[in-house]
Image 1 (cartoon, rainbow, N blue to C red):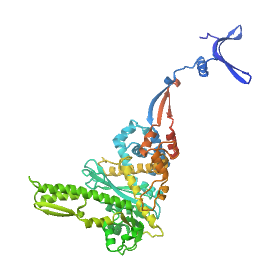
Image 2 (image 1 turned 120 degrees about the horizontal axis):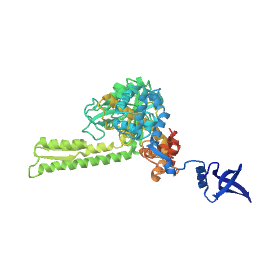
Image 3 (image 1 turned 90 degrees about the vertical axis):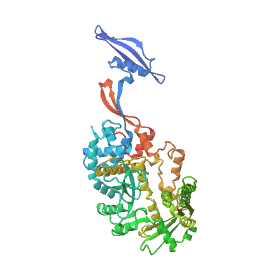
Image 4 (image 1 turned 30 degrees about the horizontal axis):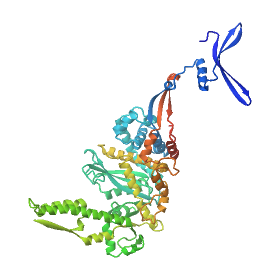
Length: 584
C-alpha cells in the first residue's frame, strides 16, 4: 500500500521499431525525495492481457472492482415484445384516438383490455390480476398503476357509450359510396342464466344445452371489421338485417352500397321489407327449392354447363335482377359424397328399428312407438325426403326414393346468385367474387370465437356488458386484421392473394394459394429461406420472449434502469414489417 506522499500507478509507454508499435506497461511507485519526484519500477505488466492491465489501473485509482455477475441485478423481467407489437399497431391505426381524443383513465383501461384480449384472452378478473400483478409490460407502458376488476367493468360501460361514434368513424375510414359491405351472423354460448340476451337458440358451436347470444358483423370487401351488434339468442338471422340497413343509412350516412349476405340471411321477405324500400343493392343466393323451380320451369337449362361453369339467365319471377348460375364440379362431388354418407348412416339406424320389430322377445309394437323412433332418426340426419316409409302396428319397412335422390343430385354443385346491380358496374365474374368474399367474415368469426380472441364463453350477467364485451373483441380483431396483413411474410397467410386468384381456371373454381404461399407451407420458411414462418398466435408467443428488464446497478449506488433483451432476427423483422418500435 502506498505511503503518504507517494502513489502507485501503471505507466504505459509506446515505441516504434521497424514499422511496428510496442507498448510497455510498468507498475511504478512515484514519491518525493529531497524535493524531487522519483519513480521506482515495481514490476513489468506488459505480459498481461490488456483487460487485466486496465483492471489494475482502475483499482489503483480507487475504483471498487466486483465480479460482473454481482455488478447488476435483474429486479424484474416482463414479457414485452407481443405487447409492443399490438400496442404499436393500435396507436399507428389511431384506434386510441377514435375511442377518445384526449387521454383518460377509462381510455387507457380499454386500450389495455384490447391488447390483453389480443395477446392473452381471458376473463376480466384474470385480466385485472394480470395488470395489477403484471404478467407483461402492458400495465407499465400505459401507466395504469393499481387496477381492479370493477374498474374494468366501468371502462366497459364507458366503451359501450362510444360504440356508435367509434363504428361511424371506422365506416368513414373503410366504407364509401358504391362499395361492397359484407354481413353475416353467428352465435356463441353463454355461461349462466341471468342475462336477458341469453336464450335457447340455434348453436353453431354444438353447445345446444347452453343459452345462446347472437351477433352480426359488418366488414368491408376485404373482411376488415367495421361494426358489430348483439341480439338475443333466439333471434333469427334474417331479422337482424333491418338494424344493419338502418345503421348503414342513418349512422354511417351511406346511400348507395351493395350489401352481400348469404341466402339464409337475405331472404325474399328482407328484400321486400328492408332493402328495396331503402333503395339498397344486394348480392345473395337462391335456396335449393327456388333453383329446382327454375329448372322445372325451363329458365335454367342444365345442358348449359356441359362445356362451361358460369352463365347469366333471366326469369320473370325476378324482374330487374340478374341471375348468375355457377357450376362447381368439386362441390358437386362433395355434396354427393356427403348425401350418400347420410343415407347410409340413416339406413343403419333404421335397420336397428326393423330388427327391433322382428325380435322374438318383447318386439317393438305400435305405430306410435315405432314412429317416434323413426322420427328421431330422420330428424338427426335430415334426409327424410329421400325415403319412403311404411309404418304398421306390427312392423316397419323403408326404401330409398331414388327419383328424389336423382333430382337433387342433378342440382349438386349448382348455386344461383341474384343481384340488381347493373352489369356495367359489376361484371358476372366480379359478382361471383363478391359473394365468395363472405368467406372473409367466416375467417373473422373463427378468429373471434376460437384460437385467437376467444369471445366465448360469455359470463357477463348484464346485457350492456355482453354488448361491450363483443364490441371489445371486435376492436381486438380490428388490430389483429391489420397486424396479419403486415406480418404476412412471416405467417402461413398468403401474402400474394392476387397471384392465387390468377391461378384459378375460373372464378367458380376453388380458391388457390399463390406459389409463394405453397412454398412457405412446404419449406416452413419465409420466401427468402432465412426465417421460420409461424401461425399468428405462434408469432405472438415468440415476440413475447423479447423482455423488458428492470436492472439495479449495485456499483452505482443502486441506480435502476430499463434494458430490453436483444431481439432475435425474427423479432427484428416482425417489428420492421409492423412499422413500430419495441422500445416503448
